[in-house]
Length: 143
Image 1: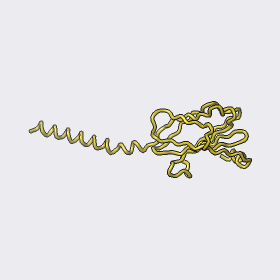
Image 2: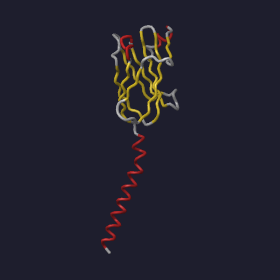
Image 3: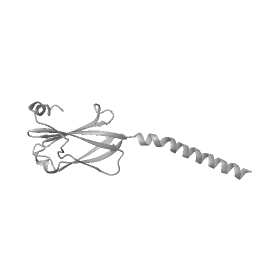
Image 4: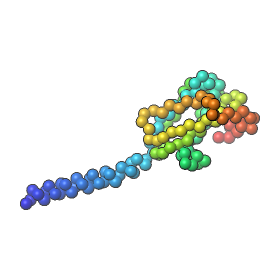
């Protein structure tokens, strides 16, 4: 009778371990993850003087959760690498690309978690908004 009780004890311990792992999985998924993003300017890069990035959850785009700013007085490289920690979800990325005579505001999407590195093009597309007023150019130093 003793071997049966040892087997039952092992099975019960195994069941407890499996239950604990299953209970912890949603918690592990909720932790922020490091995301490596490469922003590519394309042929526009020599004119870019600054890049301002704002990350917000898509369901609440008015509340930024992260941000970053980069300055390039002599012109930006063709690609900018940025590492950011974000929790799981769908994000709106708003990129303000500052050039000598304009500010381009581009919106891109990101889903976290993601596999591998992320590449985002910041070349001007027809749907992107271009701002070229002196009021907005003055505002570029207020971030």
